[in-house]
Length: 409
Ligand code: AMP
Ligand code: MG
Image 1 (cartoon, rainbow, N blue to C red):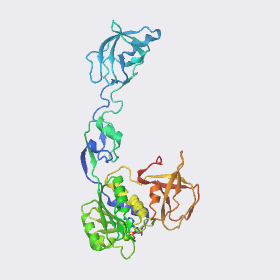
Image 2: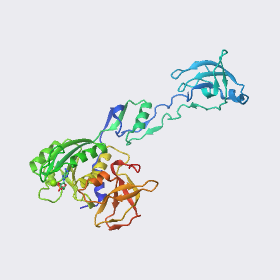
Image 3: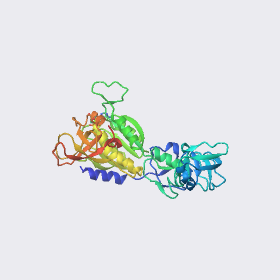
Image 4: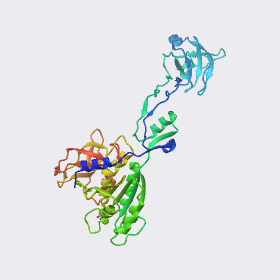
């Protein structure tokens, strides 16, 4: 039996970053960037109009207080076209949003502040401008050479847009770890089946596969193995080529808890079995070559919490993520909690209230078979092993479940 920080350290030490692959931009959302991305050019690449109107020399519009400025329109510039001529004194170029600012001009007068040119082709300026008004400068968004995206970050919509703007149709990302999930238990049947008396439906296989996807892995659900050596061995062998193998159930001290023994027979070297935490005490971790093997307890909440505490950080480390979870924060307890000291507790908690201070309320039923506490829960409330009682109003450490931030309801 070891403590949580030590167990986490052992898992992270075994998880090594995976190789890089180049993928099309369209497939990049949610993937982890493998290299820093620097701009090879300015964005925008040229100074441009940010309003429809007239490109002018700002000093030519100064006398507008008197309403007397008229400028000769020399050209018409839609977006996508560049001007051949410069704007000279007393001149203006009709320009549309996005068109490059012609030489000589240093501002744009909005079309709303002008009067349509008449016969003479002169535009009347109703309001003066200052140099820089209604134009965007080259490099004003991103400078050539600037570090724009950092390796290890998860690519979100804005990052995808930026990569497109930077001219990167292919993106270097870290290969996703392949993660196999096996449920164990003679009593377990799949959701589409009718459980006979004594049987229950398999929730772990599905919840753990979903957690794996959420964490950024490629999930392979391999079904249910019965509590017999042969059945377990067949399934475990099928997972041989994956980076991570996650089993649920059968890791405790019961007569049919064969998982550890079978894993050992198949060449998995145990790293730890048992961590002083609640839920999740019997969690097993071992290695077969580079493969990480987790035996999670069968109780649905224990399985999910131990995935969250140990498997997810391993996935994140393999992905080379900048931030390795679980994401932590602080909250104020909104009701008393009584605990059995001796193990570090991870209480499933609801988040309550609005405003700058988060309030966490322990779900009333903390038994590890109660999956509803995970459905309703938004955080895990971390309680150190020596604490037997927490008063309402105490500040506590929380871990946000499923990467949820304080904004989640
Ligand atoms: P075990 O860790 O195998 O002793 O299982 C502990 C408890 O979790 C037992 O009540 C099992 O029936 C239950 N359990 C095990 N595996 C699953 C599963 N895949 N889905 C739902 N419950 C499970
Ligand atoms: Mg079992």
